[in-house]
Image 1 (cartoon, rainbow, N blue to C red):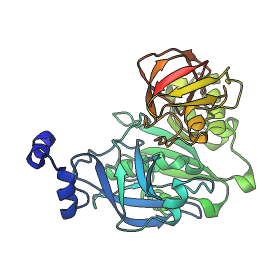
Image 2: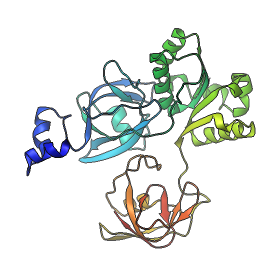
Image 3: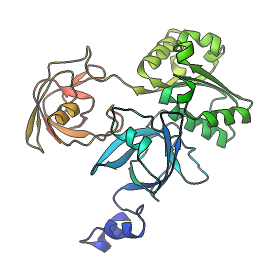
Image 4: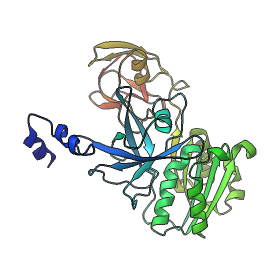
Length: 349
């Protein structure tokens, strides 16, 4: 259908005309219009977006790549969708937390305005609720790790499936708590929902070994956990030690990429499209090395999830900095945000 539409406007692009009528109308990309921006605690906001007609919806727990124009260049980041998948008002939301040293989160938290147009990718992610929904569940999150879980809770509420749910959420202080009103309203509405907050500045970080006290019947529950890497490592190890790994589902928000024991020999990266050779040590991603050399490389999440920063490896070997694995995927698309050179390589990018 889109090819037929394009042919009507050849040689001009149909988007040149469609955007004059409605900025969300496009045959090339999915766009959205910012309808409102709502604070979520002291360090985050929820950005509510009306997507274009090609939006296919999402499953609770999935994420979308958001493209925003900053200083004349589109920057992409992956954010969990925090809205109910079946919103009455047709709006979807993402809820970024401020990273002061970042580029996109300061823009979304402090600059973006109602009426701004953003770009949207297709939704992705496998951290979702199973079907049928389990009768007993426990959600464990920390910091902004609550974002995919709040979408799950909203969906359970919408479909009246809150039967026996415990939420254990950790936050540094109460001022930083995201979705405070939503959590309070849902707990008041459903007898089957219990919310337990952990203020880490007062009580310290939660340890998995405390679960027997916090949620005595946790072994009987399907678990969904989201948050920083160290927090999840502790939980994952505990579930494994207890023989309950099959009931542990997780989403990591702060994977460690590079700079550790997985560093390799490095090498020269030949960027074929830009005709530039860049030195890359064994602890630095190809993306970071290219940026340091002044290349304008497209990226999204920077953690190997969104597949925005991919190029075709033409020659050489790579080391995956997430796990140290070495591969030689010649002719295949590779993610430059999680891989480094293992010797000299050539990449089409």
